[in-house]
Image (cartoon, rainbow, N blue to C red; front, side, top):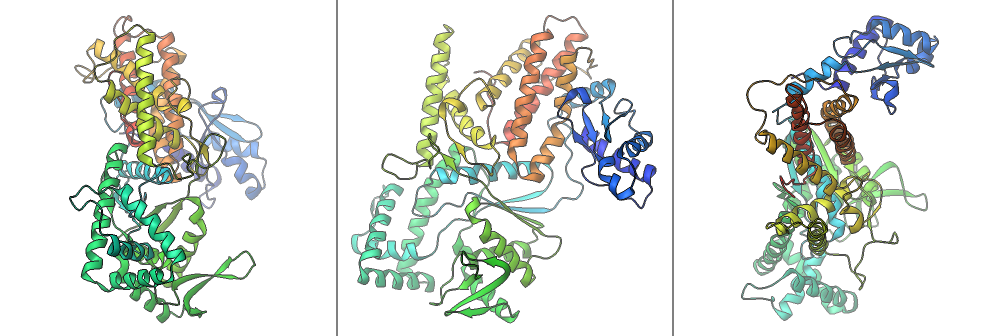
Length: 583
């Protein structure tokens, strides 16, 4: 399968730079970018502007030389030089038509896997044991899942890791309280809500009761040293939490997420500290073992340490994250991706820096913190319940599905249509999809306000808009007998109308968008592409009759419909959002 246009044109521009300016001139990035104004072409090369200072020549002159050296006439029309020094490129109509014909029936839409695949570990979600997942876990879970889908499509070996908080002082508190009151639901009916209530009681006791505080600390030691009773209670807490978390993951459609709690790395922590000491990186500061990293200071401007062992001999999540990183690299990971909120940015910068100092993060292994902002309620404040607690994620999904059901019923009544027999399934797909898309369509580093009315709208950049667009296209394909794909052999595609041409340009760009979303760790690139594609399809449908057109135009336009439906299905699937053939 041929490369998508930006990938193809990048290669051509790179080759032309060597021809026009000599092999010693390094082609500066970016070589080619999509234009924001279609009147100026589909893609533009800013290379002449970047080289003007280096070569000491006017950018317009360099643009002319680059244009003359470009070999693109099989893909694009004659390059256009524009001042002050850009080369604009417009995709050739015949190439576009042939490319669309190639994409018909191709489930991967021409997106070839990487020629140099690597093992990628993506760390996301990360709830704590003994606490229900809340809205704060939404972004990590669905951003991480989307990135895993994107990277996997591109042919990499993806390991999806749920680094669960299942170790530490909170378990000493809980075990100490459970020693007194016993486990709730001995008949197996215990709920995570009951455990959360116990946690609040234990936390209050720990703050106010010195005797309880000392006992809780002893129970932590018991747990860490392998005490049978303490371990049994801990395993019960973990199992109960994981079961309820899995129910949330099932609702979100999150699959293949391997739970690997902090406890997994406990046996490795002593060796981590010992090896840091052997490397001469550890400094004892007020009894704690620390590693100081150049460039990191506290609010007073004093050097800021990464504490790898506390003064009482205990370890913290700094040590655990170092152990996890080291273990993942030793297991063959070439890329490490941590999808964690922006508040942890400094922590990960320091962990990565210490790992490089220790030689655990060698050259060629990439570690990235994919930071994200907050989900806010109306008024721009943190999303909370009336009592001030974090909104449980399951409650958020329940409300979205209930509102989606009302939305579907009201729409049917407005159109004097029968309510669908599968209204509950439609509500589930639309409601959960709306929540996920409302999040993923935002730049991940931005905070955003959660609005059910906005996310469930059929107007604008929303999941329901795209899901309804898919269902509408599928109904056309079904009526034409194309529901299972194009009948017979290949289809001759013609792109005579401007709306056909615009839709085709959107369709062939999908592979480039997928790669950019994966490389930049920004799912919103894909969301924007799908929204603009649906808008282009709407314009095509309004101006270009499909089923009423005579052959061979009818089949050509059905081919555009088929590739559009396939693109929406694949794109939404990468976002973790389902589609329905009928809504």
